[in-house]
Image (cartoon, rainbow, N blue to C red; front, side, top):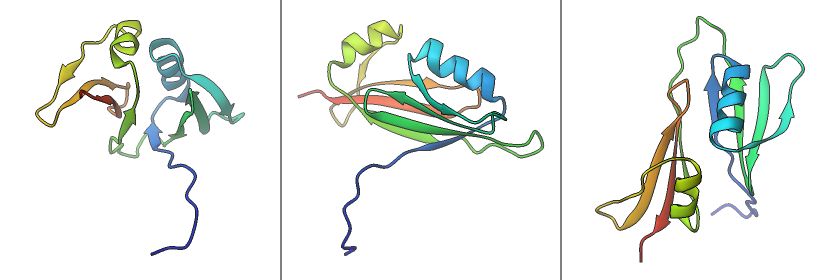
Length: 113
C-alpha cells in the first residue's frame, strides 16, 4: 500500500474547441471557470468542490471520450436545474448523464436508499 494522503482525483477531458466547451460547462452545467490559459489550451472548471481539467487537442488528434462519475446529494433538485431526468439503476443509484460537445460525459449519482 502507498503511504500517502490522497486529497482529490480530477478528471481530464480532451476537447476540440475550448471556447465551445467552456460555454457548455458554464451555461449548461453551471460550472465556474477556475483558470483558463491565455492560449485556450488548458482550463480548470469547478462546480462546488468538484474540478475538471479541460485540455484542447489538435484538430487531427482523435478524442477518446472520458467519463466522470460525480456523487451528489439532492440529485432531483440538481437534475431539475439542469433540465434532466433522474432514473434509478439496477444497482440502486439515482442517476442522470450529460454529454459534452466532444462526447465526454458526466454521470451524476446519489444512493437511492
